[in-house]
Length: 270
Ligand code: C2E
Ligand code: MG
Ligand code: MG
Image (tube, rainbow, N blue to C red; front, side, top):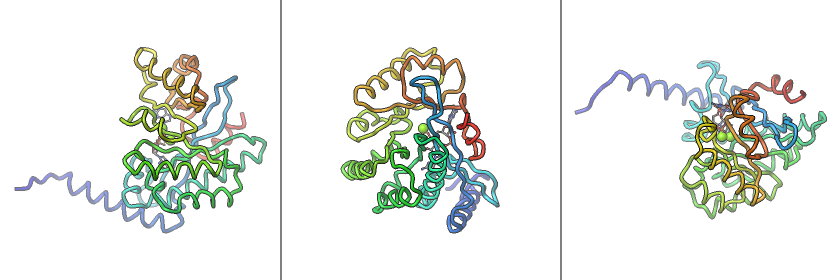
């Protein structure tokens, strides 16, 4: 006996459509995929923009504007995250080089790297070819990875991340604290930056446990000479409140939502 419901047909047709259009879009040099940028603010002294995180958007000719949560998992499953991710990396590096040349030599760009990309045998070569091709200073590029890499061979992951770091590129652990292997991963792998997940920040003023957790992460990072970025700051009240924790960078809608390149350039020149 099988149970039928109308939703099944709709969902699988939508999924097949998405797959068909995604394959086509990646064959067309990925030009339907654009990069939005969200400013990263240095809060060590006076709050100033220190760079931006690159976030992929798919502007599909047939299906309209699609957010990453709705296409990245499928792109990872199909292996298409490799060309898409490389396109995002190259675009982000190009823009960062431009900001660096325009009088902001220390501005950095953070780019999300899927574990599927990390598993490619030639990933280090690919990253090097982008750095050399674009001419960006490697230390102005930070690659963000998530805890999902822990499901893989850790010896291999450690080797790959070390080879990436040997290029001079920085490596960050994104969404830190959300998975069940955060602490052991931070101990085992050579991260330059921990990005404190936004779930700790929402309602932080009313939650002593969250306050204790964020303070402990930042204290740990300071002792191990690791930088920290607090994500998901949505208003001034939270921004003022969390300054006392002493993170390196703040990021969130309070400063700006992710925006297209033209808009980020207005923001970073302030
Ligand atoms: P992420 O890397 O953790 O990026 C932060 C996400 O949080 C972004 O969502 C951003 O728009 C959102 N965000 C930032 N500040 C706030 C805030 O104050 N409040 C709230 N509610 N949200 C905030 P977005 O752009 O939809 O991206 C979602 C995820 O998709 C990213 O999470 C990342 O894991 C993935 N992603 C995006 N672009 C790429 C890419 O080029 N490659 C890969 N592999 N993954 C990507
Ligand atoms: Mg990220
Ligand atoms: Mg994140």
